[in-house]
Length: 277
Length: 344
Image (cartoon, rainbow over all chains, first blue to last red; front, top):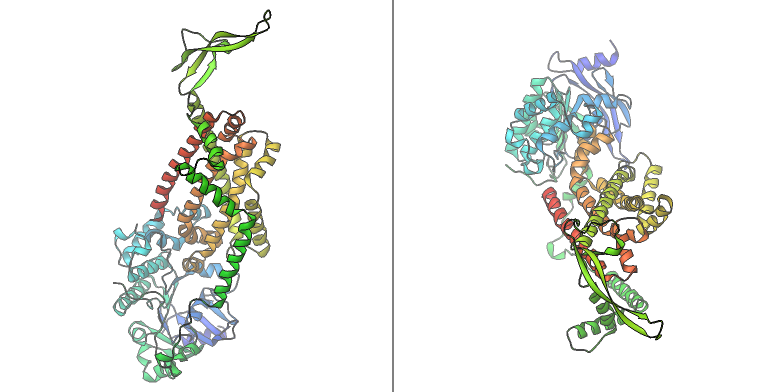
């Protein structure tokens, strides 16, 4: 057993969960000199719902985007299972990792069904991808996941832009679930939604991921939501991990470490109009 | 947002009465307007805009009867008068039709006898004397219209094939010419260069060159229009790809999709309506231009138009112009409907 494996085994919490994602001394310095990640090390166990909590600019989005290589690391290593992220393994890692986005990132003009099926565009043969002709089993699977996220058959042909924000994020989650990914990255999945809808969507994400045994890394800025939904909280501030533990240990002292000295409390302005029922 | 920006709330805000919104225009805008006006005055002199206005005014005044005559009115009037009545029948001298059976004329045709008075010199008196001759014509009442419609169909075919060529050529040009999809700077510059070149070459000139290579006829016509159209579509398609919403593209990239798949699944649905609109515009333009490039022998209705115009058969020219107008008009209605259905 390597030293890293022993370390990650020691850090894995919740008793006996296998480390699934491991971060070792991640650093990311953007071109403007801002260090978004400043030596982040953590392990996420298989099947965990892990919330990355922190104020704006704490580096939580960057941490998520490192997992599927949307952001290049300056230094450090990210490992998914046995595979270390490298330019060579990038494609294969991306196929095992799905992502749910703050702005839903749907093709607004396209129908719900084609948005969901687009989640398999990297998996089908080229000719199928170019014709947009997905095989039967994927189309059946698409219906299954659309139903799983609480949408109805009548939503399938509707344009994504015709749906409410909460429904659009459900479509985003359905797209992420389509290929039964090992890991789901959820980057501020409810920042554009009102509080009631946020709870529904987060609950749905957690349950659906748990059914499939998927590990979830979900960034949030609302401490109450993190306490409510997380199996585990990684608190970040200025690119460093300042808290790592189960939600019941995330007390006001820990919260202070994340937010003290910030005049604007944990609130990130949503670029999309908030809240549609 | 970076952490530093959150501290904005920490500075002491000024009271609102000290706030200040800049005026929407400043002296630079005024100067720019002045310069443009001066340039237009200078150019207007060179382009004889005053003369144009004067002559047009005269023509309008004479048309409504305020003024007796006008130079422009006379010139245009004579020409327009000659266009009417439109010639829609086709007549051929019977004497020249050798193998025709008078008892079984082709459908719809009839024979017309016309008395023609010719002056012949009498060899004895050395005077020109009138002689009445009867000439027979085989008249097809819609013959010429049918012929023009046939030519119009040919023109439309040229336009369709030109559009197909434009679309096929412009797709790779758009891919390499879109900044966010081109594989490298060289491909980008090369593609943009080709697109600018194709757009800069007038189709009439391209057609003239191609007629030298491919001979008279439709091939030169649709190739010329297709190349020119590719210049337009390549530019518009590429700019739409660049302007498409990046968020769904990032979502599919994150799932491991390569550039072509992202383009197909995240960009194409966004740009499809405007692609259809551009393509319909190019088709519409090709129909009109197909009528023009016939002038240099590149097939279609333009060749017929040029022939009739050169032989002063303005009645025939009138029919041709009417058919072109009606075709463009109908096409416009259809494309407006297709567009509204796609964009709505």
